[in-house]
Structures are given as C-alpha cells and as structure tokens.
Length: 292
Image 1 (cartoon, rainbow, N blue to C red):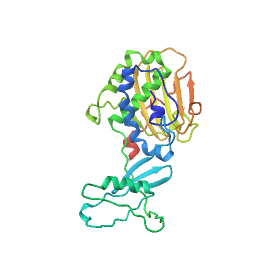
Image 2 (cartoon, rainbow, N blue to C red):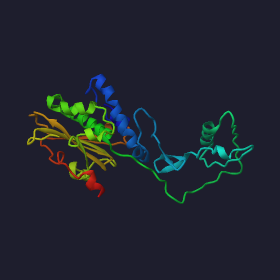
Image 3 (cartoon, rainbow, N blue to C red):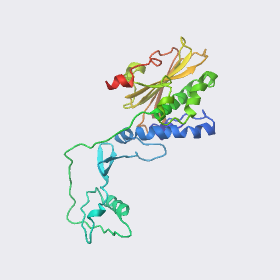
Image 4 (cartoon, helix red, strand yellow):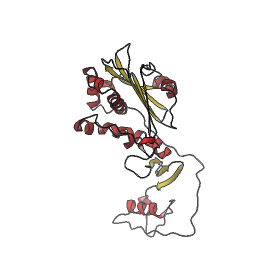
C-alpha cells in the first residue's frame, strides 16, 4: 500500500485497503517496479520511503561500475584485478573518485594469496570521458505489468471501496496472485497494456514535473472499471479491472503524485469527476506501434 513513496517517491500512502496477508504478499509486485524505474529515480534524485536522501542508480559500463546521482556520474568500482597479470610487487593504477572507493576495491580483490596496499602519489587528477556512458535498461515483462495492475487496483479500492469488493473483479485479483514471472503464454494482454499516448491527452496536464498519474473510474456504458497509470508522465499503461455495478455520483478520480515532494501535503493532487473519462478505457497506442 505504500508503493508511493517506497519505490516511486512522493509521500502518498494508501492505507487500510488490503488485509495484512495480501499487503505482504503483494510486496513482491512492488519490488518489481523499483529496479525497472531506478534509473529515472536516480536521475531525478527521488527520495524513497524512510530515507533522508535520494538512492543512487548503479550501472555497469564494460567492467566498470558507475554511480549516478542526478546529473553527476562517478566511478563506483573500477574493473576487477586481472589475476593473470599479478606478480611480485605489481603496481596497478586505479581511477577512483575518492579513497573510500579505492578501499572497497581492495576489499573486493584482496585474497589470502594477494595482498594489496594503497598508495597515493602526486596530486589528484581529473579525467573526462570523451564518450557517453552506455546504460542498458529492461522494461516490461508480465511481472512488471502485474505490478502496474496492482497499483491500479489499489487506487481503485481507495476511491471506490464498495465497487472494489465486487465479484466482477475476482479474475483480476486472481491474476495478481499468480506467479507469472515472464510467462507470456499465460498472460492476458487485455487486462494491462502499454499505452503510448501522451499522458496529457488522456488525463490533462500533470501539475508536477515528471509527476506520476493514477486515474481510475467506472464506465456507464460498459459497466466496467478502468484505470490509467503513468510513471514520470512518460510511461503509460491502460488497465481493465473488470465488470462492476456502481451507481455513485463520483465516476472518475485522477490522482497526480509528485515524486520529488518532501511532505505528504505537497505530494498529491486529486481530481474527482462526476462523469467517466472515456479516454481511460481506450486501448491507446500499442507498444508495437510505439516502437515502429
């Protein structure tokens, strides 16, 4: 229930929606969101839950590990020691940002047979890369889309608690509890899908830079519950939660979340509507079409 701010910043928490067992069980879905969105969180310096500062993003480029915090990228761990080149009194020059990194490298490479002493000679030097860093990212997969569906259900239950308890959503809830991993053969694509439209064309402008969006609603025409999820106002998804019977006045609730907020009062803007936003339930632009 605390996906925001645990994995995605902001200070918003949806409380009391799931029983303890389901809230704990759904935690694995939250854990799948965080690593796939970690680079954006690191670049924006998003502060996760119960932390005083942003969590850096670590990535490998060749054999060197780098650390990204905002626009700053430093070497976090030089390439490992090549054992084949080590002899008596071998000297190895390390490119490190500080002594702490050098000491961690020593701890990682020192063995019972190889003893390493650190020695700094001369004044510190600054080196500049002439090429950009190569970062490989993995997005999507059935487990990632499951996690998006979990977010959608959580916010639907927050805004439409009675409708969220109806039997029509049972198949969607069952899907969330299955261990799909990357089982594309058994993934029901009509439940959660990539949506390549601009977020503003679906739910209007987000009041926060790089804000997240969770829009949920019940359609009068189809009698179904739908959701739209957007991370950082650029990665969008559509969700079909299932059939519901609902006669309340509130038909759409759009929640905008500021991932960079320090306080709960500054982290969320909620817009309820007494009409259903038909853009939420549309298929949108598929990932296949987006790539092409």
